[in-house]
Amino acid sequence: MKSSRGMPGLGMGVVRAIVLVGAVFLALRGALTGSFIFDDYALLALPRFLDNPLQPFWHQHVEGGLHYRPLGVLLWWLSERLFGADAYLHYLLNAALLSAVVLALWRLLVRLVGAEGSAFAIAFAFAVHPIAIGTTVWLSNRYELLASVLGLLALSQAWEYRQTRRAGALLGTLLLFALGLCAKENTAALISAAFVFWWWPSAERPGWLDRRQLACLWLVAVFAAWLLVRHWVLPATGTEQLFAYKSPWVLFSEGMAAWFLKLPSYLFLWPRLGGVTATLFGLGALGLLLLVWSASRRPWGRERVALIMAGLALIAVAALVQWPRTGLVLMNLHFGVDTLEDVLAARHYFMSALGMAMVMAALLAFAGQAMTLRQRLLAGLS
Image (cartoon, rainbow, N blue to C red; front, side):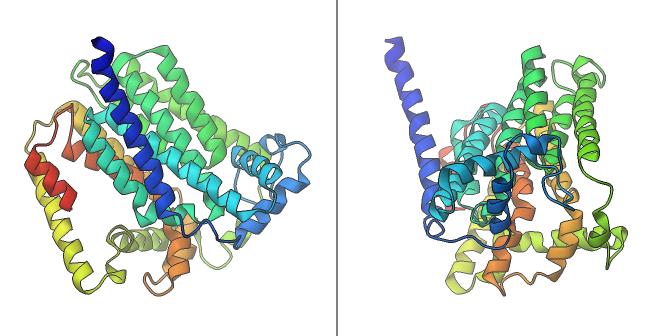
């Protein structure tokens, strides 16, 4: 009898996973027949010059480059050896990586809020959102996808350490974050969320200084070690071209302003909506706001606040670490004019969208509190 009662839950979990993966591949179906574009050609050629795929860990892998992404290069080396120049298989790999991101996000949200249905709905919305799809259809963003998978798995371990103080969870967090940084530097944004997880007091430990908070020093140590290795591997030159036309401060201020100004367009797609579609979308957004307002009247415990603050940190730091590129790219982007440019710039919002998913999970459902039927209907319409 025990096994028969356990099977439905297991079966529903498998069904939800299949639905999430199916949604990703269905949303990406039009891109699977695409070809290589822009940086894809360089990334496809780079592995052919590497006899040892581990060499980028200790040697500069892009002459004059500013990025230290040896794990991402290793993945490109493996995919080039397996798929060659078959773009279809490379797109399948990116689709598989996005599927892994969505599944990792789903399971993380389940662990954070304890509500299977709400976590599934938020993960599904992320899976089919143009930010996720736009990031995935540019093969060069494989770095972003790989770093996100590792970072989300690390966040899951970080939340477990917040709850249990297990040494294994601490080690798992640090190892996964170290690998994530070797995939792409944007992992720093996910590290900031883990920092909040550990620093924010809990109901069991209301103090601001205990073993969990002290573990934040390990997060700082991992990031500092990555910076030192990056400094050792990459030459000091390379920034001259980046700051040739604008000073760092101008790039930073313009990049941050452009990022925030374009954020509503990428989230809600207003410039690309019109007529009935815009009206329905507006009604759905209004319904979502009503749902958030209704859910906000639930108790605001320390765990819920910690999750919201971690999500906000992820949103902000993900924007900050991209400031040179946002100043060069988003400043010159007019959303809604050129579809290709809109798609190529979607990556600047990918990790921030993960933070938004965490905030929405904390606002809509927390600590196993399931939605009422009325709330589920409202969420579905939204």
